[in-house]
Image 1: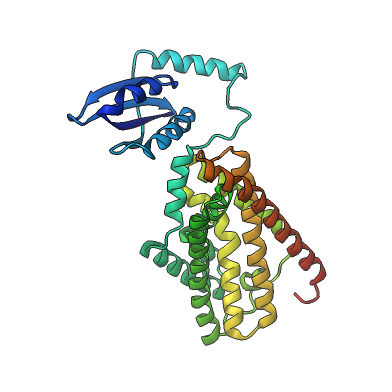
Image 2: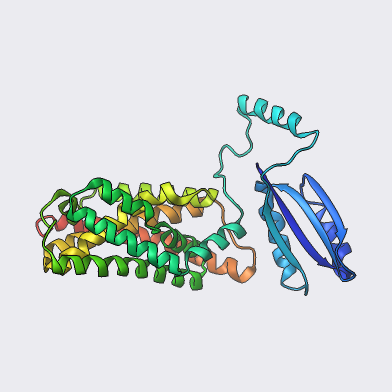
Length: 340
């Protein structure tokens, strides 16, 4: 359903002015009810692509009005006598090629995406356990030279969230959330390294099979893999789709080479560890390059003046910085083939 419900609790003394302003925005339905002597509840049913404009206004009001609260609720089903006629009209417009948003990236509102990025930037017990389990499974899969086991590890590895949150925070200039996201990503990789180093130290099994050797070598073709993974992850994040399947793509680029790097360190194979480290770095930077580019062209922008100023600086800086790192890594790959 392409609709969402906005619930706004408005203090009585501010109701008239806010009520008048809210009615100027495009909406499907609009209800007003008095919740108490102090506050009035306004419910606004709107299309998803119209939510952000209303929330931007309400965000500004919330900064100056006490007792003002806003909630955004997804709508699974909405029935009225006009819905069938409108669906027929939309189908006709699609056939004629006159969709309004066909040239734009469809995405959730900035506020929903910020909440999702905030959730992905936190280190939780679930995140720690899933990383731990996926690291064990992936390491065993590489030792056994079992592609199926390695794929299974990538399915459960929650590595997409923090990496995408890094790109999203960089685009908005949210340095506090950026720091948390970087910390979460490094924390996840540290767990993978700890597990794989232990396996590499206590056993030399799996150090000569294809699953391991393929993750200790890096070529230029790995850059498009990382870019594709990052683009898929960013698009899934923008659309608020389930990240499970897309998360596998990001895990492909991060989990196995991290395990190979840890196993190499544990075994004392520094040359192989260097190749795996370079592969991990190339993949991370390629993912970030694609993600910051997708987020930049999606039109995500803050509304507060001070946040706009930070975003205007952070957005081009992030793109230039990540692009420069990817180019440097490409040069290192070309110049260091003999080393790897």
